[in-house]
Amino acid sequence: MSNFNQTAPLPSSVAVLGSTGSVGRQALEVAAAHGIPVAMLSANCNVDLMEEQARLFRPRFCAMADENSARALAVRLADTSVQVLAGEAGVSEGIAACGADVYVNSILGEAGLAPTLAVIDTGRRLALSNKESLVVAGDIVMARAKERGCDIIPVDSEHSAIFQCLAAGKRSEVKRILLTASGGPFFGYTKEQLRNVSLADTLRHPTWQMGAKITVDSATLMNKGFEVIEAVHLFGVPADRVEVLVHRESIIHSAVEYIDNTVIAELSKPDMRACVQYALTYPARAEGPTEPLDLFAVGKLTFAKPDRENFPLLALAGEAIGQGGAVPAALNAANEVAVAAFLREQLSFLGIAEVVGETVARMGAARQCRDLDSILAADREARAVAQELCGKLSRRS
Image (cartoon, rainbow, N blue to C red; front, side, top):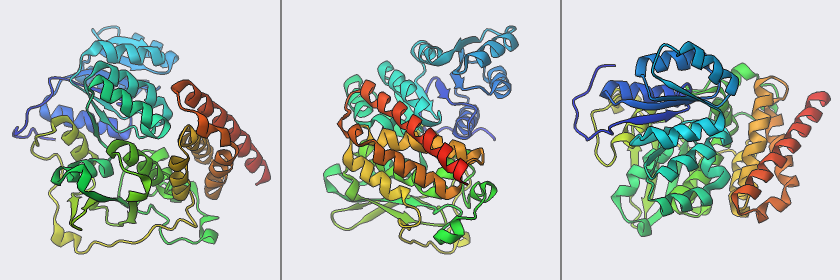
């Protein structure tokens, strides 16, 4: 990627958490294109790619959540000045010490919550791609961000779009948030058709190139359910004012409807680099890292209602945010377990929703959980229940 003419002030340094994942790699592309120094990298266990990134970007710190991987990386980087940190504590230590202007959190799953809170405690900008931080503990995350004066700029394409559209009016003037969804690879499928879909079928997303877990979540519409919960927390709107629209072309990334019935939408080619860049340069803009949008080539934009009957996880997410407490955390935990089993081909596609739904149904007391410790305890309990259910379904099949 070539360097761009600068039209916006850039951060003096950036930390990329989850740097070996899809969004993390794209964040590093943006940093490289703009010449932004990288202060810290973190990953789980991909030692090969982390070594490559560390040698290219020369951060002060590299943190590996997996301690064995950290030991292996330390040996490989012994000839450099990069300090390798280990475990969850090491990730938090690096966040506190690296002094980055902006932290991109693209860690996958509930594992991203502790780093989110650690970044918030620095008071620096958080470019948030880890939606599970808000799904699991949205009230706590947003309250702490307000207390610490931490700006959270969303990186998810939909929430980045909403964030930009909200600049057109006052929050009190917002009527609805229109959250778009691609519909995934199985749009229009019946329950009978879904019984026979394979892992390979599920991973063929029609418009986005993403990691395996989020691609599965897109296919089940769980990802859209999580995004409804995320929008409730980020933008302070009730769930019944967030409407999901299936938009197969993935050109309108979301929209905001105001009380005068004006709808403001954000349109662009589907490319996460644009979302990352805006989070780095906000409130200004820099020349784009993506191809311009050619509306003549697009030709038409279509919309449809989501199928909540054959894809029940979207509705379940709405119920979870309504119940509150640790119910969304239980929803996320069960989904992580079920999707992992599906990716190992130990659970059917329809089994994902079965496991998640039954787990949440068993977690009635979770709605009473309000503090972080009790929410995390509910998360652990939900994982155990989901593991048990996955085992039963696997043996039954």
